[in-house]
Image (cartoon, rainbow, N blue to C red; front, side):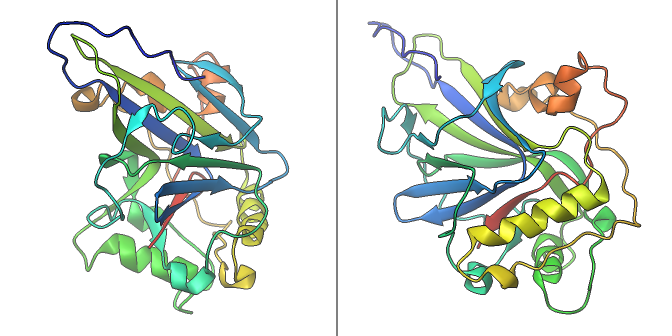
Length: 258
């Protein structure tokens, strides 16, 4: 659960931020009243949430638009200017109308921050050149040759509605991950994602299982009070932060619908 709001002080408040980090397979869709995030039901996926390594199962939907309203709505209403986020056209797949394993409803964020950046050139997928979802992702993220990075984690940043005298940042994570996915695991998860969409078969993304991509290391992001530990996968957390294998651009994706 989100920490309780602090008592109101007579001191002049400073911004009190919340970072929402998405790890693993999530689909993000800007709608009329905020950002809706869905993950499909995938065999072997662990759906969890938590803060600073204190992780528990996510057993219910999260709605911070209607309920509690702990987050101040921001002004970001698209992924424009964030080519590091995997993204493809909503007009191709339709709305997120199908069954899902978990759904998170958030206000519009103040910032969208791509984290744990890998190289777009390491993203290899089947049927390149066919005009499918893989081509859309590569073209959108390439941004006409202006971008070479791709994010393994998406940070949605907010101010809290209740501020504190000294201001602080809380980083809160959601996970939809395999612990050690193979290429086939990733493709099975992508295939399972088709049920989320209005036009299911249009989501045709499959990675090239024969291709390899280097692990991407976590990084401290002091400007946003995000530490390497905040960026850890479930495997890295469960291995007491000593995992010998990290995520890559081929097995750790969040998608923005544009």
